[in-house]
Amino acid sequence: MNQPELLIRGLSTGYPRRPVIRDLSLPPLPAGKLIAFVGPNAAGKSTLLMALAGLLPSTGVVALADRDLSSLSARERAKVMAFTPQSLPQGVALSVIESVIVALRASATADPLPGAHAAQRAAAALDRLGIAALGLESLDQLSGGQRQLVSLAQALVRDPKVLLLDEPTSALDLRHQIVVMRTLRRLAAEGHLVIVVLHDLNLAGRWADCVVVLDHGGCAAAGTPAEALSVDIIADVYGVMARIEPGPEGRPHIIIDDVLPSPGQSRPRKRSA
Ligand SMILES: Nc1ncnc2c1ncn2[C@@H]1O[C@H](COP(=O)(O)OP(=O)(O)OP(=O)(O)O)[C@@H](O)[C@H]1O
Image (cartoon, rainbow, N blue to C red; front, side):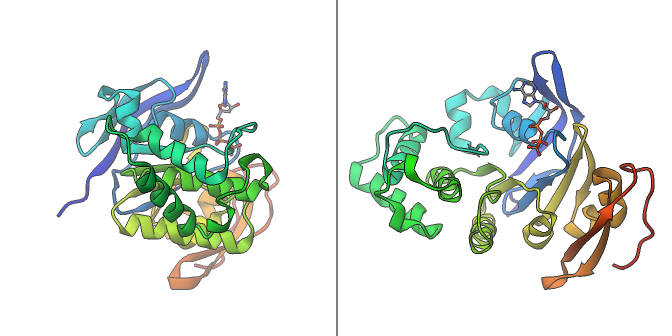
């Protein structure tokens, strides 16, 4: 059976008097895949994610399974997609498990979930990320990395078709980075479309099915990790000199040697593949 696809065609979005993404079209992004959006600071990654979540006005087409998402109300769209921002708001007087239950209830249909069932699902989401022990902790007393994991649990618990995650590993230690990326891969294998913004090109190269390289509000490259994360593209977009070596499962392992004198102006020779 064909997986439903997220279609992005001619998308433009941004902020009042500040266009960021201009006329962006991407290859169809099928459910069942883990997609990494990468690119330098201010490339427009978060802006694109927010526009896909319906949190910024946009023009162009964003459609899932041939259904134009702009026709959905914010509540309907939130049932299909979960968006996790870079950081959780501070000053929320809830325990971890309460915050996950609140996230679940906020996305529930008209029928409220029975309390025990909601608590069970929240506990399962925490468990999936290895943070069940944090359930009764106060949200405001967590470390940055713990807050990031709870934020992810708030998205997972809703079981949306599409997960939009803005740098979910940026505050995590090495072990938790792998736990999260492995969990995201498993969610994709279960049929979700997982779109994740990453700065770490090696996490993108190791775990993503498809990498989209954004630059100046446009798409510089999109394809398999090996296609999208080439030495030349990394030089053009990031202005750094990279080497690519074979990593686990034949995926690219990227070593950054130095900055280029000026981004994109001086390209290194391809040294290895
Ligand atoms: N609320 C806002 N109002 C106006 N401009 C904004 C706003 N938020 C972001 N921008 C601008 O939009 C552009 C893209 O920002 P965005 O946060 O999408 O980049 P990014 O690729 O996610 O960057 P980073 O890797 O640094 O998080 C930047 O020039 C930024 O200054």
